[in-house]
Image 1 (spheres, rainbow, N blue to C red):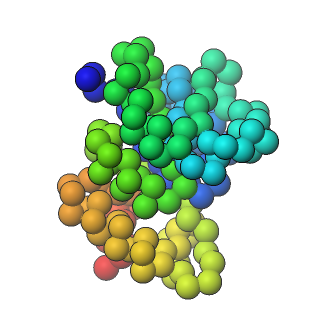
Image 2 (spheres, rainbow, N blue to C red):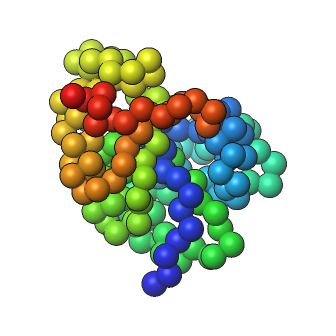
Length: 160
């Protein structure tokens, strides 16, 4: 098994939108955006909408979490992969499945009932907090950073 060239993994409940499809992709130099999400993997309408905001020359894949785990190690060396997930639980599932993720960028986790806001664009519930603590315990840095030119804030500091 080869090690896939994963440039960054981002948690964003909107998945792919302008900031992700153009700004982050260009900054990272990614040529493949891999959306690892069970719902998006089976929703062609959502896929078409996301494809519209991805920079020219960048490919997209929409895989379930399990398919991502099963095929990520088959990625070609030339593929510069930007993984986008909806929740921290999705990222933890990938890591426990053997996907070599060593850094997590958190973009947006919208506020909803039962969540508390820890950053302008990030709200968490008890399950999210527990998952972030597990990721941090695994030695994986997690930072909030909406756009590349913004300074990053550590999730561990925001959860304190």
